[in-house]
View 1 (tube, rainbow, N blue to C red):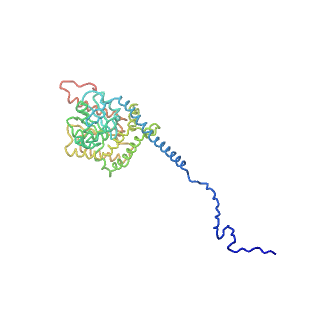
View 2: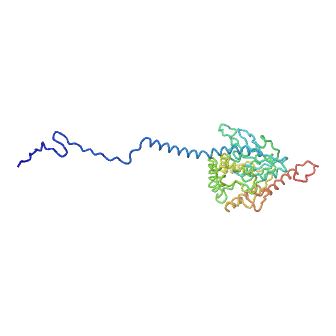
View 3: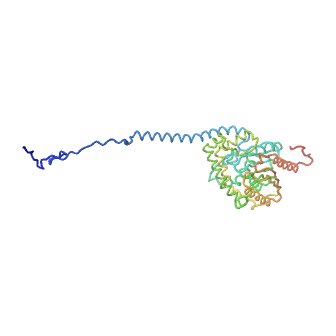
Length: 404
């Protein structure tokens, strides 16, 4: 039997093909391709362009409402200015919008509530214009009036008083109705809410120009102190933040969208509002500068209260100027009772510093009487006009038989 040749360890071949003189062959196996390959450069580029596209769409959507709102404001302003009134230069590169109608003396000056413009007198002014000269205007920044030109180096402007306070308001009004437009004197100042403080302050500074003041639903300087400061909390905790939101909505064009969709109400709530007044109200709701000035008047109300206090400390209210206080049963029937009660307490202080004042209460009304029930207020002012004319009629001249 033939024996199989034996191999020594040195010459035996291993299964991996290695010999002492030859290293083993590595068994290279192909790994299966992964189903998730690394993204290519073109993939990231497409993602970038898609993201940029959506960002551009979003920016476009945000830019369209304010741009359309601005275009609409410019077009509306042209129409509104044709309905009466003119801008008057009071100096300092500033124009105030003034609307005067009727003829004769004395001249009735109408002062609007806080943060509102002259269209609130739309029912009162025409009725008074039948018997005498009557003017309404927009305070600085409100309505169609310019805001003050800010120039910290102008010392003369600083002497006008802080912007959006009663000191500045009265200075502006004085220039407007004397130097700029030269209205017939004397003046009967009819002020509603914040406008009542303007009327009182004006009479303090320029008593020789004023015969009477009529304070309609007035704000009084002690109001924020009554009932543990409930009005202060409401004013700065609710009214102010709401005003800031209204300003933001006007700036972004959202207010106009809300008006188009009939989601917002007009500030003036009354029946039979003329179309031109409705147009002006909508215009001002969408006008950022008007909303900004309204916020400022609210913000500086406490400073205004401080200024009127100081005015009464410097000199007493002139006895030559009659004071009539006209109110309803409430300041606002939509407010909580505690606020209306605090407002009523503040009127007691007003009557204490004006002991000769005549208080007239119009039952069933509130501060909205100037456009909801204007007839009673018109009659009160007409009586003051007749009284002044009777006392200044030349001797021997008979009294007129009508309201003229």
